[in-house]
Image (tube, rainbow, N blue to C red; front, side):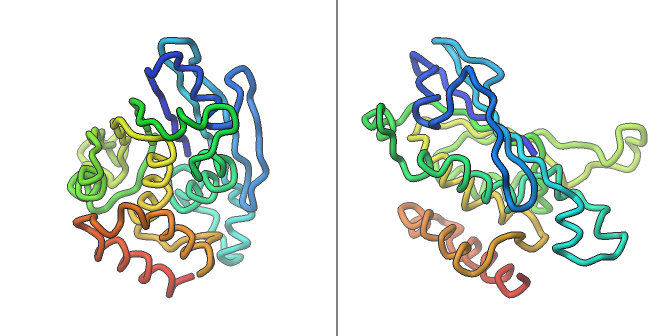
Length: 228
């Protein structure tokens, strides 16, 4: 699964200070279910993009879920889900908290940001994506994907490429993705126990109380909590 975050705030390479990840480096981090990699496809004063690539180990996933062969056949390694939230919390923990040793003022300043999620499972379709993100001020752009490009008559899948455009702090952007992305998936959360789910909800305290879909969001978490 791939998340990119771009900004045209100038100098744009200051995004590296906010994320605590140097634009000239490619860094890897070990996760309970695989690895995460952070790198910058572009980094200059005009525009900077940071990428978080999460690789889910299907063997570890299968062991977590059971030993049957069908457990190996899963879209979990490829779609944005609770795995992405775990990666954000571990890899971008300082940025998620809104801290920055060298650029604290910038960390607290709204800047133009674009988050792009390469593949998001959402059976609720574009309408659900809009219901969740537009009340937070985002311009939401979605691109649907066919079930199989070789067989277009099969129709559309429930997978989307999603772009979120907004001017806000990086911490706010990360908290919105961190809390809302797991809700888009019909499947249960993975590597999230009750304590960690409570942490997810705490990150939404500053905006969840006024969100029009508050009940739907909380209900989604409670539903998945019983499935853990």
